[in-house]
Image (cartoon, rainbow, N blue to C red; front, top):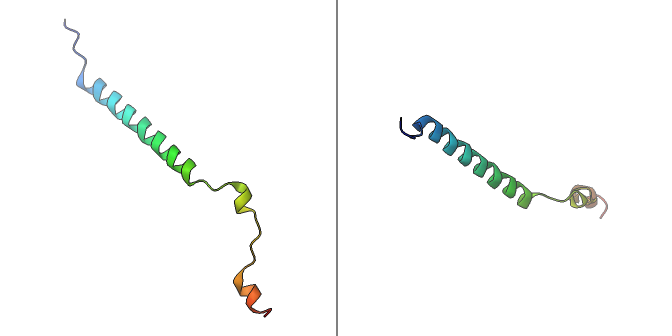
Length: 54
């Protein structure tokens, strides 16, 4: 018998590699878009409340 790799096995390996690469891209993008917690908890007055005080 020869050492020919079945097409299904190779296709599955390629799909797994592509899925892992896509996962890494998504994680990298999510990390780039992440807003630090310090910035999200900072109090910023809303304009509608300041309007009534003028």
